[in-house]
Amino acid sequence: MAGRSSDRRFGGDDEQVNIAVNRKAFHDFSVEERYEAGIVLTGTEVKSLRAGRLTIGEGYVRVHKDEVWLESVHIPPYEHGTYQNHEPRRTRKLLLRRSEIRRLTEESQARGYTLVPLRMYWKHGRAKVEVGVARGKRNVDKRDDIAKRDAKRDMERAVADRYRRGLG
Image 1 (tube, rainbow, N blue to C red):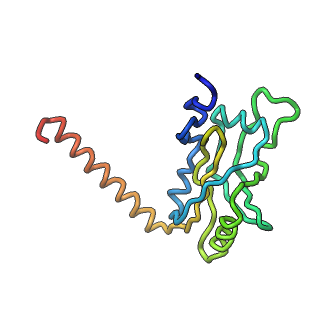
Image 2: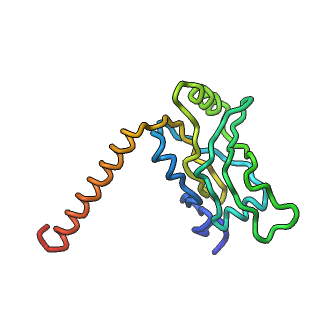
Image 3: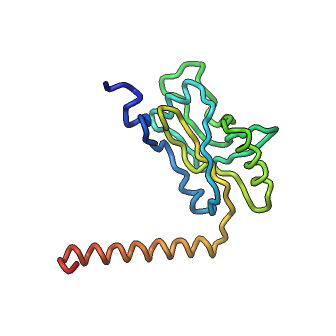
């Protein structure tokens, strides 16, 4: 009954469990579209991911010869690995449908757009990467986002304070 597929830490039946989220991407880019991709990993990389070890912030995605590759994502070597441990920053292949690869190729060649990994997560016990088609933000846009987030937080505090006092 307590099999691996139903274990919450590894993305059981219907749920998605985040391994890492690229918060820097949401700050620096405006995400237009999202794609879910599988990823080709070695055994020690999977074990390292199951331990929750991953740095995705510096990563990027590129399309080369009708294949999609994830680059500069750091998965540290597995602690109990042997001489067969993996290279931490190796290029990893992403698995997408041919039509999605064609669309990603067109969108990444459009001026101002780039492909960024947004998050890595477990889904049905398999590692998945969410790839975003994004446009870089200017500093003015970043300041606007920060101002909106602060205003929303202030409103939520005011409402919570009002209910706590019994006025709501």
